[in-house]
Image (cartoon, rainbow, N blue to C red; front, side, top):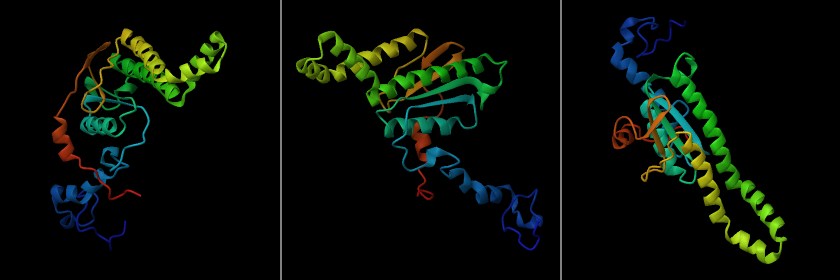
Length: 221
């Protein structure tokens, strides 16, 4: 430790000169800016557009629940064509997935696997993989004429909507909520009991969080 370089404000437990620590209030003011760095809390990033489908899992006793909720809200607003889902687990804590004795831990891991599979279908439709499979099948059945090809191309959006509805029905049948908010397009899901999902948000109103966590472009490149 360099005793010749004491911070004016610092950690009272490690500061060589206690008189320079100036108490807990000054300690918080000295380090609080670090919590607003986008690499620490992505919700502070000024621009969240261009991100892919996202699943967020938090809990009512998770210290990062408000960060996660506002992050989901912003992801939905800035990525309207993507699938954004947030799950809030009642009475659980941060990273409760690792506690294998908890039933909610198994539910959370299961939902991660389901979201990955569900998201894969969305990605395939966006990239045209699923559509091309269906188109090739129809061309084979109809002989692949130009007229039929044009007809297939004209109905791509309808085919995509029908196919995605089938995917959604599959997960709804498993008990998963797929109701999207009309405000931000996010799937807000609360889990009060294992295997029981409810379409609702938990916590402070989003208007409060928006004012408390303004975007920080200080560290933007």
